[in-house]
Length: 330
Image (cartoon, rainbow, N blue to C red; front, side):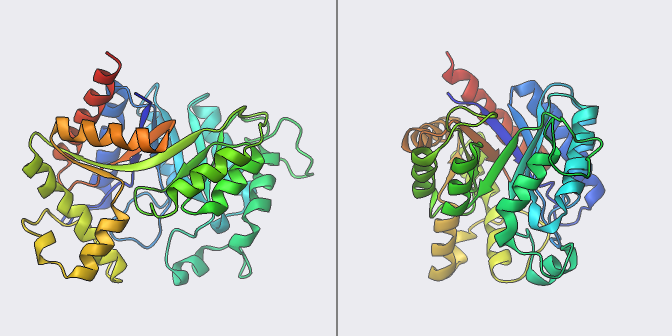
C-alpha cells in the first residue's frame, strides 16, 4: 500500500486548552514516527477556537525538536497572509535545525474568516490572485542562486520541498505548471477531487524538484475496535463541521450518540458531501474503505486526519490505520 502521513490540527477539545493540545500534538507525532508514518503536517488556521496550530512554523519546531526521523511539514502555510521572505526565513531556519526533514505546503486561501484575514495580511491590497507570483518569489529566496537582491538567511539554498495545496482545479493547474507535488484537500472539500487529479496529471511539467506527478490526498479515518465505537467517535468531527458551516466555530465537542439521526436533511446532506472521503469502522471495515479509495483515485500518498475527542482514542485510530498499512505490505 502507498505511504500514509498524518495531518494534525492540534485540536482543542471542549474543556481543554491550547497547552494540552500542543502536548498531544507532540505525543501523536512521536507515536506516528514509531508506527511508520511518512510525514507529520500541521495547518495554518486563524481565529478558530478548536485549532491550536495558528503559528504553524512554531508548532513545527516543537514537533521536529521532539522527534528524530519523521518528516515535519506545513499543510499548509496560507501564503497570502505572509511576505514570502518571512516564510523563506522561517522554513530556512527549520531546515537548518532539522536538515532533510522539513516540507512546505502552500495554500492560497486565508485559512480564516474575512475579518481575520484582513487583520493578517501584510498589506490591505494583498490578494489570493497574487499567489502564483508569491510562490515564485518564495521559491527564488530558497534557491541556490536567488535573483533578488534581498537574501533569506537562513533560507538561501535550503532544500525544502515545496507542495501546492488545493481544493479546486486552480491549485492543480499551478502545481502541474511548476512541476511540484500536489496535495488535495479531499478530507473536507472532495467535490472537485477527481477533476483536479486528472488535470494535474495530464498537464504536469517535470521540474528540478520532481520528474513525474505526485498526488497526496487528504482522508478522514475514524478507526476503533468496533464499527459502532468508530461511528460514535466520528460524531465529534461531524458536530464540528456543522458548527463551523453554521457560523459557530467552537472547540471539538465530545461524541454524541445518535447525532446524525438528530440532524435535518440539509445538514445531513452537507456532512455526506464534505466527509465523503472518510473511513469509519473497525479495522477490516477501514481497510476495505482505504483500499477502495486508493484504487479509485490512484493516490501516491494519503494524508490521514482523525479529529477524535479523546487523545487516547485518536492514538488508537492512527495505530489501527498504521497496522492496516503495514499489513498490506505482507
